[in-house]
Length: 98
Image (cartoon, rainbow, N blue to C red; front, top):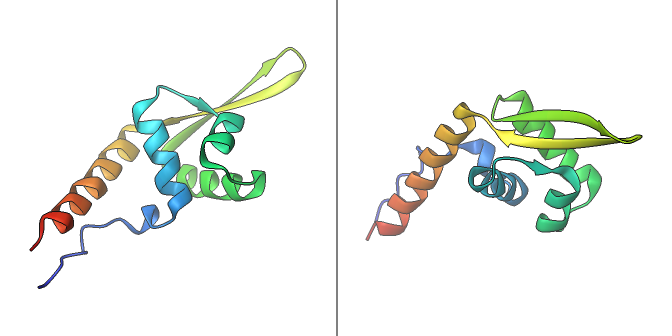
């Protein structure tokens, strides 16, 4: 049996990035602490993966003040949504391969 992995996107190989994109694709926005809790990762680990996704234009970062504290939230971009959906479609094709 031959499996075609050429359609899988290398940006989503990490379980953390896969988790981030999974959360963002079904939510309008998500804040840093909620992502950290949902994915059970450290601040540094999450921050490095978010930065990589942002640098590749897959997510947008919003920083705002709430009182005296900074609040950071993230949304998926149209490009991010398209690439992630393509990645999921490729995974589904692999699963269906017999």
